[in-house]
Image 1: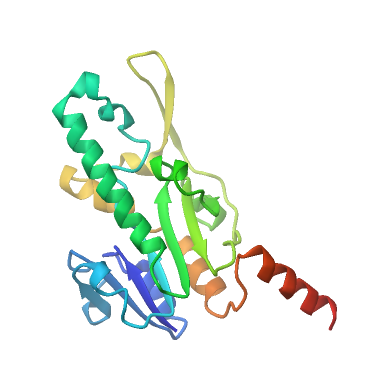
Image 2: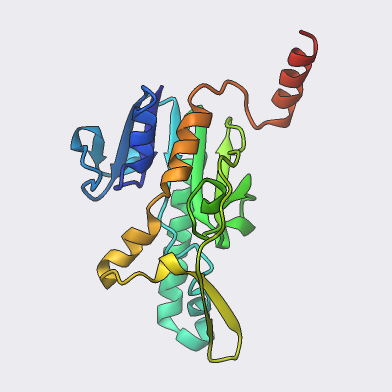
Length: 227
């Protein structure tokens, strides 16, 4: 298959599918850090959607879509800054939907829990610890003509950090989120796909021919039953 992995500079998903023999390419506005520039398209992913791909896996930016910092959209409190954030959130939603609705047969769009869940219901929510990585990071997948991703190796969620905010509410974060990255690198490092999830995508979606559409699932099950 020809696979486009959008908004990915780490090339973790790209290389996982390459290991399965597919012609996978990562695509991002930034240069790749995965060490395979010959498998990387540096540029706007929207310019690549009509190039005859069989599958799209995309990780659109979540800065203005996730639940983190949701209070900063309060116009009464933050005024012009909140208006700007709302404008940027609208643009992020349009970008997300353009990827989800593009004319590629098989699609997976990934994002953390956030505002977009209220607009388009996700297909499933997965965790790194379902795929062998000791970390807690709820991740939503929106799927088109792909089966739900099945857990491969369930482990514990790893260490958790707890803190109390100014309102006295207890918050907890997975310890891996609090590594001492430079501020400018923090967003990139936190957005990288966990290796176990990348492997599961490549293993489970390499040869799939049925979809997550309920009518197609019924036909598939009837076909198996009548054998």
